[in-house]
Length: 352
Image (tube, rainbow, N blue to C red; front, side):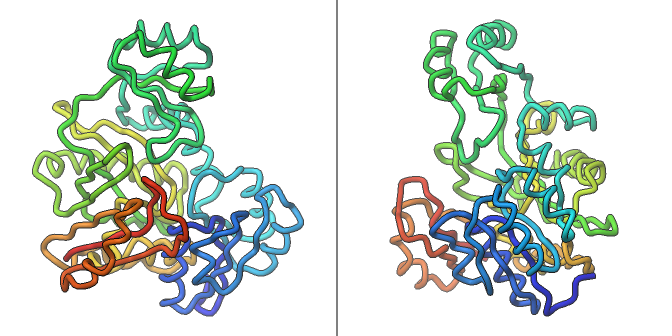
């Protein structure tokens, strides 16, 4: 057990790290952020910051010596850095969860072994592979890079075979997966926390709505079409967490379809679709992640209000802060980012 007063190392300096640091501080922990970027929203609220690359062994050694446990706020970190740190300090969730989540092809195959049902897919490593995959799966379809894609990046939609050249160019010929189009009524996510002792808790399943590939809103309770499929999705998420020995928050995204939940992708970390838990649940995803990596008992995921809705503030949406602050039902979170760009996550607001 890592006691309050200790220092938690966080790899990554974005808004997820910022909210982890705020949750940790409320429980008496200090946070030390490690990330290469010049602007670090998490660094604004952390006790210490190391700006260095994830391949800087000397910096990683100094970081490990200064902290009592390490976690990460996003999955695009070279697992070599995780393995380097594990030899020096406890790291949760660890390399296994990261390796599966970093590769869409490995992720789909892994989930299938546990009874999950992703969309029909084919590996695509060349332009000829893409033609073969289109012939096998048909169109419409979605071409996704195996690595580094998020918030709609690294993806190209094909309406027909004639779109193949443009789609291949859009992902710059990177190793990819072609996914058959899924007819779905709703999107939703399962967000759970798993402790070092294997204890697991799950938040109510939110209904997620995306805009241009980026999450727009999440709301609980979810419609009946989702809640009818939640138990199957939650059971899969628990199997994933247990099989990986995952410690911390884990998120699986799903499509609600006529034949049940279809797995979309997973994230081995706190997740945008559960930001509503800060005010909307007894213990937020950020608090329970800190509890888990420190070996503490997990907090309650019970709702604090009958209905909770979270909306991302993307790009110029952030300029509406004054109007939002005047709404007595709203809880505003701004991430301290200096540059406003279209589609950039600048903050979020939650209504209870």
